[in-house]
Image 1: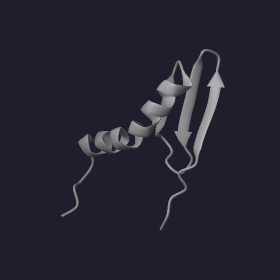
Image 2: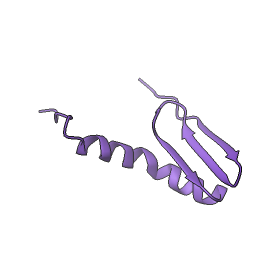
Image 3: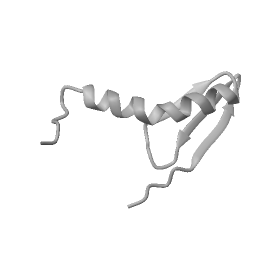
Image 4: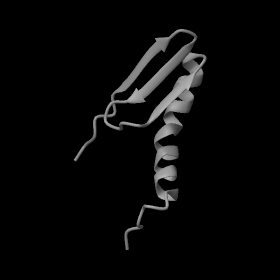
Length: 61
């Protein structure tokens, strides 16, 4: 199965906001487009790390 990794980027006042279409909850917000593109590429890994650290998660055997 292939996930749609289409980036969505928009401006909201002084902020640039980005997300990946297929991964709700994975967002980035920065003051410049360059910072946004850089942090957005790290967002999925950070999201997975936070989910794994959640006490309610049970690791797969």
